[in-house]
Amino acid sequence: MTALFGQKWTSAYGLADRNGEWLKTLDGLHPTQLELGLNRVRLAGSEWPPTAPEFRKLCQPLPEELGLPALANAWREANEHASQPTHHGWSHRAVYLAGRSAGWYELRNAGTAEECREVKRKFGVAYQALVNRECQGLPLEDQLAIEHRFDPATYSNQLQRETMKDQGIDPLDGQGARAKLMGMF
Image 1 (cartoon, rainbow, N blue to C red):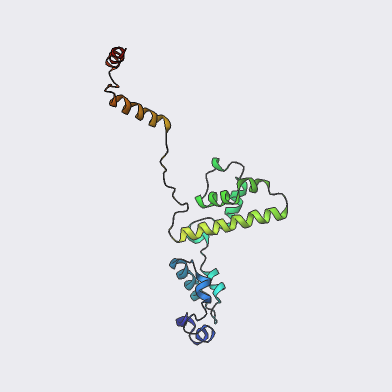
Image 2: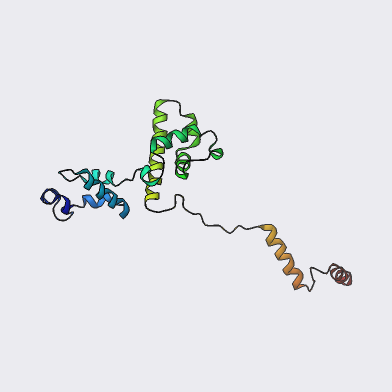
């Protein structure tokens, strides 16, 4: 910023972020987002540097810049298809995930103006988080590890085979197993 604004920057913020305001405000942003913000500051051609919160807003990518639908279009699509979300061919996976995050039931049943505003706010926050993930090159959804599932039937069969082996019985030789049992009596 010193290169862009010179004395105006240093008089407002100094050469270093002494009180940590910028560091706290920009915490969590990806380098790609910071570069985006700097490019927007350059293109704006403002005489004065932005404040830290203003700069953070400039670092937020717009969905259209990443090939995603604009927020208004995504919101409209989620509302129109909230009744059967699994049967719709979504324009982008992020729209579906933001709708799921806001709640399909809530999208369908928001009745009052306050409920509609709250659902729209939830959708917008979720959608922007997904746009940020896309900008950072992260997958939209965290991959879940495949858990080992305990199957009692498999364990029972395995235990039975081990017991038969300990007793000297061949599980594939039914006649031999019967003869061995008859010999015990």
